[in-house]
Image (cartoon, rainbow, N blue to C red):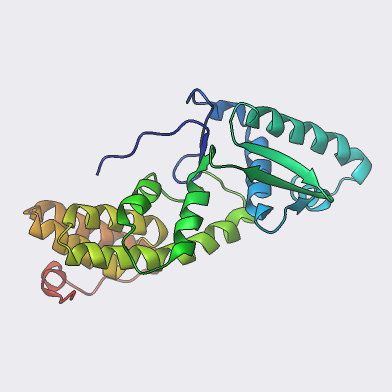
Length: 245
């Protein structure tokens, strides 16, 4: 499935971090590593009302006195605010001692869109919209900071069962191409998900792509061994014959 074109006034957190301004120009380069991490920390806590100055200081300027860190924090916050001024529908607010991100419908963030989708229901029927979001890659793929582990884990824990529901529904509808794409996205979360492998192999087989199915199987076996140091016990034929109804 072809990946959707990126939108103006947007921030993408699935796959590589990317930011687009009101002219749909890529302004990701304006975010240094520190600015990106501070922005994401504020975004992460925005649904809880925001993050305190003290907590930000503990995360990004640990071990320094409040006096010494106040200037660094102020400069960083002003830089983030300055970048967000290039984007319509979003701003960084400081209210009652907390920093938070506020936004309108003009602003698009794939993470926020995903959360909204997960909150609607889990009965399926959102495969196309969900695929637009998750096909970009693993959530916060290039963000390597322990502070964000729970952020990643929390979203992926909610996302995995929804992806499986969509995969099952699409398989029943014989939408095999979408099944394969959704399975690939699920592997970003759980590279050794046996159920996803089975759906992918059977879908590829039904599309007369047996060689591609065999490659998928072999890649899975290698990943399985690397992850838990055991051989995957089911054969390719076992998965082709497994009843998925």
